[in-house]
Amino acid sequence: MAQLQDESSRTDILNRLKRAEGQLRGIQRMLEAGEPCLDIASQMAAVRKALDSAYVRMTVCFMQQEMRAQLHLSDEDAPKLEAMLGDVQTLLGKVR
Image 1 (cartoon, rainbow, N blue to C red):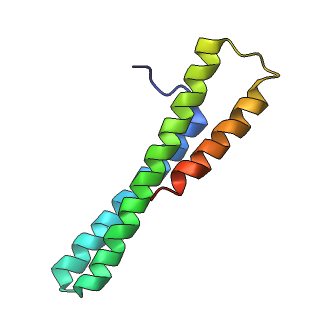
Image 2 (cartoon, helix red, strand yellow):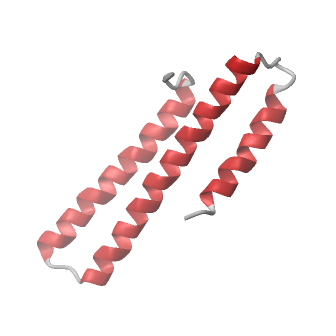
């Protein structure tokens, strides 16, 4: 399978994962401090949503990259593809 080529997309996804990593460390501290389960569960849900969001973003970036390459799209078709995949990303984001 191909690798993600777009540097800005890769950076965006890495930043999302780093934020989720920070949230996970916070949850660990909450557990160690004996915080209430409902508070911890809320933070866990937030991390799951962050990871889901990063996954959707990565998937859409991959789709965009591969569709451009495989379909040999011209530069004038790129905005149409980006708009369509933006809609796909929005729809997938509502699944959670």
